[in-house]
Image (tube, rainbow, N blue to C red; front, side, top):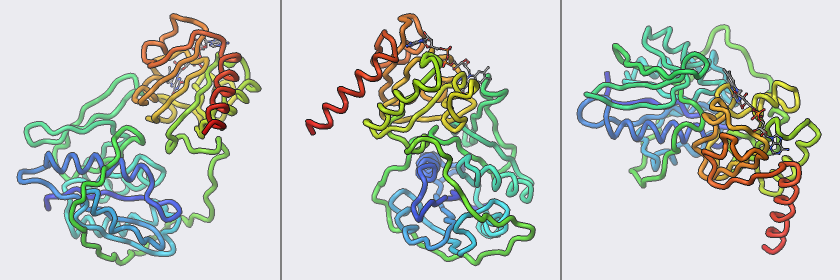
Length: 330
Ligand SMILES: Cc1cc2nc3c(=O)[nH]c(=O)nc-3n(C[C@H](O)[C@H](O)[C@H](O)COP(=O)(O)OP(=O)(O)OC[C@H]3O[C@@H](n4cnc5c(N)ncnc54)[C@H](O)[C@@H]3O)c2cc1C
């Protein structure tokens, strides 16, 4: 087995997705700690069509980049790409294979683990090295507890939860060598005919630098226009609590929390959100949290950097008006 971790990179519209940078960031950190003695290396497999920027990953710590460039990989499907990735793993023998807990990763990881008869840990939220052994943390029982695993043998296949890890930073490392991979044909693979972005907000929650979330305190679906107006002025994505989604006020794609999305934006505005533990786990790593709630005892204020005690239906329009003024002043 070779002393390296393989990262499965994902692209969208020719650019690496944010989860790819997050997986690379964590893998570069782990490679520094080393899965085995002597320091590990980071290798990346890029699956896509018309991939031009693969070599850029060298600056993020990758020493070798394999590019599987094929028109059929423009919208990669797990069953379609699995044979190509599997052939690479069998040839290069990495100690671990890491990818995002995305639609692609969630389909690819179990396929690889089944073929390789090795351990799979999905939706991981932390990794650590102890006595030269990797320890993997992931939520269990719907997020009510966390479990720590140690694989009995390597390789380990892992999918990483979106926005749970810091993205890789350019460290000016050496240029990586790039190798073109021969695509291994897949049997019984589905063909992705079309992908459609969910009709949620204008900015994707996972990618957003600012998120404005409304909770049940918004009192009804129509009042979410106030959330959208502030989000629009701030260039933010809109989020919702599960109570709101369950009530059918907002689509599931907007749900933030344990059974929704994990976000870690620079600014998180929570309006009419109580701050239940299951909501907090999905947003508490946001850099600055602003809470608007009419109840001064609401738990959300315990994690908030700025708290506004008041009626969200009045505070939101006032904030939007002030933000508009600031924008006009440049
Ligand atoms: C297994 C499990 C998983 C879960 N997963 C998630 C999850 O992923 N995400 C999630 O969000 N929840 C999740 N929940 C639900 C969670 O426990 C809470 O029920 C939910 O987050 C509450 O949503 P809320 O804050 O909108 O509503 P509430 O708890 O009803 O809070 C509404 C808040 O609005 C305030 N308010 C009322 N009127 C106004 C007003 N006019 N102006 C300002 N403030 C006002 C109230 O003071 C209150 O604090 C999960 C629960 C379970 C059991």
